[in-house]
Amino acid sequence: MSVIFRTEGLSKYFDSLKAVDGVDFAVEEGSIHAIIGPNGAGKTTFFNMLTGNFAPTAGKIFFREEDITGLKPHQITRKGIGRSFQISNIFGGLSVFEIVRVAVKATYGDAPGIIVRPKWLPEVDEKAHAIIERVGLTGFSHLQAATLSHGDEKRLEIGLVLAVSPSLLLFDEPTAGMSLDESKQTMGMLQELAKQHTIVLIEHDMDLVMSLSKKITVLQNGRKIAEGAPAEIKANPLVQQAYLGTAI
Ligand SMILES: Nc1ncnc2c1ncn2[C@@H]1O[C@H](COP(=O)(O)OP(=O)(O)OP(=O)(O)O)[C@@H](O)[C@H]1O
Ligand SMILES: [Mg+2]
Image 1: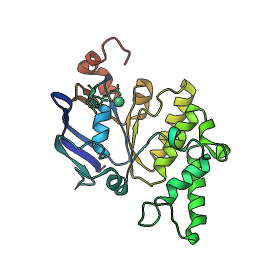
Image 2: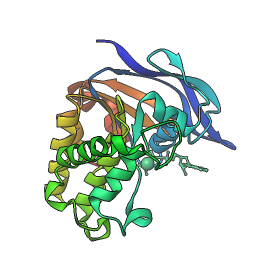
Image 3: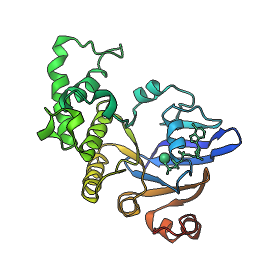
């Protein structure tokens, strides 16, 4: 198995706070790799560097061995790294189909815009429908996004990431705020997606993390304290200590 993505000594300091501190990280192509850790461990900050939203204080980021440190978010997206973002406030008035269609259209042509040659429009529609099907929203395509349940809205957010055909998908707590049923469904969907994409997942639900991930990286106070297969992580005393008082 080859490494699709890795970091070397990646760090982000906010003044004296070492939010992420010297993290070496490597993701195998085709795997689901989870990042876990207590609140404030630095997980989201780590993602924000991977997506170009934060410039690292130190360290390097490589995608398929190309140094992508310091690239802007849209440049990183174009390399094939996708991250979910929240749709609710911006696009709530559009239908599910319209929103996905806009996202697919944006991947056509050079301009980061909505102008697509008419001959491509049937293809755009076809791709939008295929994405909606993949995230299980076919029966909801005509509904306004604002009327979706929380779980369905999260699926739509995942659909928008798929529009850019990323090879690496980054998800920060995709099941946050979901009912048990909804999170199980979402995890099933991630498992399906993992057949075609590599996935890095930040997730608090330990049962889900343990059952889905090939490898788990544990952060605490910005540092990597453990890494390995789910069974190794469960048995690791440092991890148990980090989660003291919470079930792992
Ligand atoms: N923009 C910022 N400016 C200053 N400090 C920040 C900023 N973003 C995060 N931090 C701090 O960095 C540390 C790591 O935060 P981060 O959000 O990355 O943690 P996390 O592991 O994602 O936590 P959670 O599980 O609660 O989402 C925290 O102490 C947080 O307060
Ligand atoms: Mg976070």
